[in-house]
Image (cartoon, helix red, strand yellow):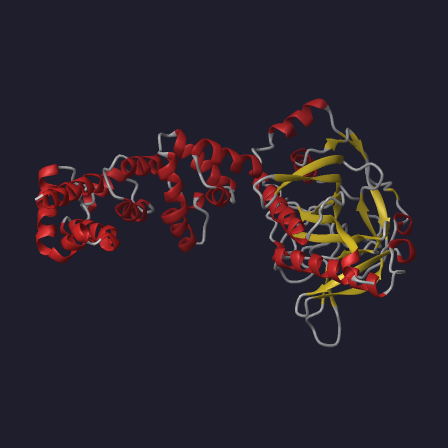
Amino acid sequence: MSAMSITTRPIIGMEIHVHLATASKMFCRCPVTYGDEPNTATCPVCLGMPGVLPVINRQAYEFAVITAIALGCQIARHTKWDRKSYYYPDLPKNYQISQYDLPLSHDGRFEIPTPDGGSKAVGIIRAHLEEDAGRNVHDRPGFTGVDLNRAGVPLLEIVTAPDMASADEAHAFAVELQRLVRHLGVSEADMQKGQMRFEPNVNVAIVDDGREYRTPIAEVKNLNSFRAIRSAVAYEIDRQIAEWQADHGYTLDRLGKINCGWRDDAGVTEVQRTKEEAHDYRYFPDPDLVPVEIDDAWLADLRGRVCELPVARRSRFQRDYGLSPRDAETLCEDRATAELFDAAVAAGGDATTLGKQFISFWAQQANTAGRTIAGLGVEAARMAELSAIVADGTISATAAAEVAAEMLTDPAGPREIAERLGRLQVGDADQIATWVDQAIAANPQAVDDALGNPKKAKKAVGFLTGQVMKLSDGQANPGVVGPLIAQRLDARRGG
């Protein structure tokens, strides 16, 4: 049978685990830390000692609800806690405190961008709160260690509908979700630290001669990079199609669901085990924790803490400030930087000039300092003034970069700094005319090219402009230089 006779449709859902940025764990007072010595951030509660009682972390619950609101979910007014029973070395109690049939939120939707500049909605089935397990450590020869510092860390699990249809869509979803939780301030979402982990569920609908087959669902566990997400999903799609082509019995009905690991070094998935169903976990209500009831006032307060979301902010920056999609995306990568940009515009800054400055020298200064642009500590009002004096021709764009570097340590205003550096532009036409005449007299070949060689004319005029700027030590106003050069060339052309 030819592969050309079939049609395929990938079906991709996602389970995401997000560490919430609380100071302490979900049900005890142990600190949430990363990189400490193994088993130093533990106590009898998170170690599962007999007789200890858990206490709910209110901030973790609020962070979870805020995220669910941003995901467009319905918020449950009543939710409870359940014990999810399974035995692994990194789960000290032999059960995990989670939420089963009454999650704190359900039925949401999340917009992701599409390559054509539009968007696509991905359904959110539920978002619920639980505690994380510990971590098995395999870096010691001869045995596996268990580090329980992570056991009990507040973990938000988000489960999507199977609405994604390609590896690129899965990648876009992951990128946007990380931006969202960082924007909300509920998680640092550092994937290398395990603060955000993705588990794509992948299978393929294959139609052959009018009959549809569904391949087994493969859940790829614990992916911690965007590249791994795209690569693993793409590999699984191709692998499952090839498996079905080799054996038409390779179907979901026959083989069920499997869990896979991703080998980044080899670029392949490996089957780990069959996937458990809900009944395998023997869920039952946790007898040590009371249900959570959320009233109107509490819910209204949490809704008020949801900031403008990244997708909406990017759209507004393009619409209101005329920024390109790429520049808007860059500025909205960090919430504080995006808010700083808004504040600078509100303080009288020129939006177009500000956009160029944020993307160029402010970003460069931030990268050098290892911070965000907002983390540089330069006030919005001073950034606004710097953009304004460039927009009105008081200083050049090149001089603005010098002034910006001084602004990091000098609290004076940009105009004052520029004046001290000798970077205020000269707008006096007579003085600039003198520099123009000197440049023209010193460069007869450029003048000849500008007048008589159409292929070189533009470059020649640019060269003459550069000579004028050099003669003026960068202080001549380009808005005056250009017309004066054109005037002088026209006079020679007419002669």
